[in-house]
Amino acid sequence: MHVTTGQAKATKYIFVTGGVSSSLGKGIISASLAKLLQARGMKVTIQKLDPYINIDPGTLNPYEHGECYVTDDGAETDLDLGHYERFLNVRTSQANNITTGRIYQSVIDKERRGEYLGRTVQVIPHITDEIKRCVQILGEGDRYDFVITEIGGTVGDIESLPYIEAVRQMRWEQPKDTLVIHLTLVPYLKAAGELKTKPTQHSVKQLLEFGVQPDILVCRTEHNLSKSIRTKLARFCNVGVEAVIQSIDAKTIYDVPLLMQQERLDEVVLNKLEVKSEAPINLNSWMNFLQRHKNPEGTVDIALVGKYVELQDSYKSIVEAFTHAGASCGVKVNLRWIHSEQVQSSELKSLFDGVHGILVAPGFGSRGIDGKIEAIRFAREEGIPFLGICLGMQCAVIEFARNVLGLEQAHSTEIKDYTPDPVIDLMEAQKGLADMGGTMRLGAYPCQLVEDSIAARAYGVENTEERHRHRYEFNDAYRDRFVEAGMIPTGTHPDSNLVEIVEIPDHPWFLGAQFHPEYKSTVESPHPLFKSFLEAALHHSGAESNSELSNRDKSQGS
Ligand code: GLN
Image 1 (cartoon, rainbow, N blue to C red):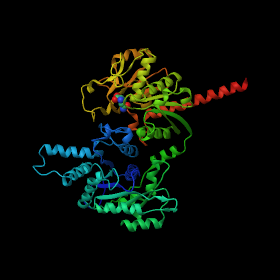
Image 2: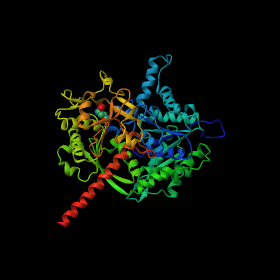
Image 3: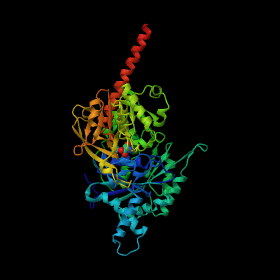
């Protein structure tokens, strides 16, 4: 369905800026608005413009920027794109995440090719034109009714100025097709017992200095905004009172679309853009998910072993994949965050006491590797369901080589340059690459599954496609020895025969995936491997409590 405006049909561009403070949740507000518009039958996409100079977050440490999210087309992107996909169940691509580095790179490349015909290349108009091009490209070809563009950073930051200027120009050039939503903070002063509007007033003034009048204010707040606060904000910030939208702290991010619907954010947007929407809003599957998410019938405890556990944003997609799969299986997933460096120095029985499944996380480099290997050994020997993702899978291979095949010094050549048994080794295609940025094996690749494996049963199909981000792989020279000893490749890349999944059929549920299943989990399509892992964990918890009960019976009987 395309929007009918009474004029020529056109894609509408909605910009979301942030004021007063960072971390107000522009990504979630953008995704929530997109969800509401999508639920009215509109085609929507969301884009993030990041004002930093890196070409993409692929080379950034997770401590700097949280998880690096990967799209089907192999773009290494901001973690907000994960929210967009999880909310909308629609794939994003490289075009959905643009950084200042990428903008400048493209302008400089054009300059070198002589495309500016001898003119001086400047921030205005060349950089701003490139920003506008990157926004408008998503509106080409009638693909979307709405393009929602989230501008990273906070208004007033020096580095985001060219973006705000590009927004000003687009508002001026396409007044009927553009709209600006400003997300701000309305803080509560405990001592005064009051919500304060002044920071929002200042932030809007700052936007006005740059020539941008926001059309809608979304106000993050810990308390309900009274009518008088709304009127005051409307008066000082030149917006209608209906365009002052409250965004009160929510228990879960998945409540935010409904909170925005209660505040009529979607209606205000449609009215302002003069878009008629006759279709009734359909949020049935979303409500269904929320209902299950909020009313679990049981709980499972999963240990998440990784080296960035102090910063949980580093594993955002994994956490959300558990939320989706948990709702689908009717259980609440309690994550126990375990630092891989802590594993070595602890007594494993007490560290993992009561967990029903162990997940070993993706990662790079040697820090915490021995702890990961120890955690896997524990899961394998104790029959605890295990899911290893990327580096987690590679560690499972190393563990098996050392402790089952007896190759004591087996390792990955990422961690140890020389090892007599490089069971994980640099991929052929990676050899000789000098650049670090964008050169990994990235994006979606097909994967062929072995009949009757855990993976094939979970997916219910023989062929799938999953997203990758790695340089190292299972070393095929060892394949036969692994198979003989009971670790089986059950998923391979059909052309190259690269091993993408390993399993131990002799274990209740043991699976390592070279790819990242978490990137493809959405509210509407929880990932089959996460679901299968949780079912196994649930089974394990049942078995555990049964054995506890029978132990108790025994001890009471004796
Ligand atoms: N560091 C490993 C590799 O490059 C694993 C990467 C990951 O876990 N994403 O192969």
